[in-house]
Length: 464
Ligand SMILES: Cc1cc2nc3c(=O)[nH]c(=O)nc-3n(C[C@H](O)[C@H](O)[C@H](O)COP(=O)(O)OP(=O)(O)OC[C@H]3O[C@@H](n4cnc5c(N)ncnc54)[C@H](O)[C@@H]3O)c2cc1C
Image (cartoon, rainbow, N blue to C red; front, side, top):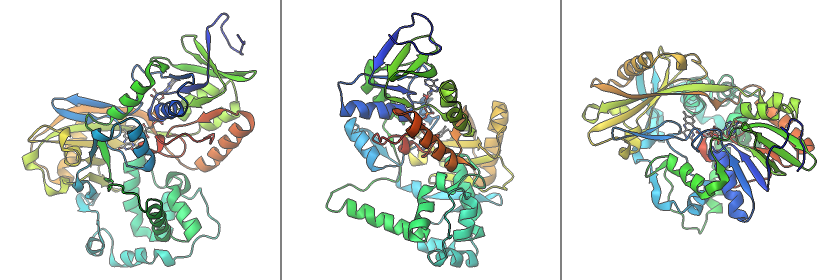
């Protein structure tokens, strides 16, 4: 047995072909695909929590299906492949057609987001001058030097005009619980920045992307995909299924404590003293955890990992009377623009999107609050959060019926923020891993893709 710095004498070490730290969606999918490619390899996934799935968590309460983490998934080719590999095609539940409908809160009321050219021309969300400005985006000159560190607000203002900025800020708070003035467009929405760089315009880039996708699937009889999907027993079905495919290769309640390197292998030591040696190590835990695991191995790399900021979020789940739901609550839900008097980020009409998420005659609404703009809100009492949720719901949607709080859920330091410096940080991390730590890879949503679908792709050799 090899001795590594910091080892306890006589600790038991197991040699593995692949060790994955973290059994959130990213770690589970990496291990699953690795075994799919080579079933005979020795894989171990260590997870600190007593259950797998990371932030993906579904609870059934009083006939309501509560998603404590992601509410839905966006389909993609890699998600299709994963669902097929798990044999879960029959368990997919598409979002209802009304999920296309969304509202934005401005000036104390909700305004529908236009879904077609006619609605776009008529929407009060933008003045006529701003609509014309938006239509001229393809003719706007691109920046001579593409700046991946430009903020989303600056990019949108430059390409689409200043009136489009608050709308995009609302969307960003829905995706990142973040602040569009600080998130880097090249990191948070790389397709937008890339569209400008390659095609000179966002619209032209999107058109080209759609054309490429059509060509790639020409001749293939692919059923039309829903905009969003879930599973028959909720989002956790997917991570539970991945976890059971791993069997006893998945170790729960097994927190990694440090990573060292001696000779030809990395050694992952758990808090209970057990350890695993491997030449292939994937850290699929949050970057702030990877920081502490790697501190003894590479201080500079750890410092970069520790630089990724996170947002916290609270959700209040409300049981409403389905017979009294106003039209403003039909569809996916609403997001408030910054500058509104409420600290709520938005509300999701969960049971309008997935009718099986509420019992007959009831309506499930998830009000989300906190995020980067209101960082301390998550620490307020349940009573305060419920009061904020119900008063904001009444003000914006006009719902006047009874509202019963089913649950208040908080996630602390849960959503990574690709803010100023993220692009440069990833460049440094990638270089460091390539040059000094071959076989060590970083996965998960701390780096390049914030949403769940981005964590479920087939493995790539990229270090980060
Ligand atoms: C409230 C909320 C709502 C969301 N809504 C959506 C949505 O609607 N749609 C969408 O697409 N995405 C959504 N997301 C994002 C989505 O949940 C994430 O993209 C996804 O969970 C990230 O997966 P991950 O594996 O990278 O990380 P995580 O889910 O964070 O998993 C990391 C795992 O590492 C484990 N770990 C930590 N430390 C250690 C250690 N020392 N040793 C071993 N294991 C460790 C953790 O316990 C955890 O299980 C939402 C996220 C949150 C928080």
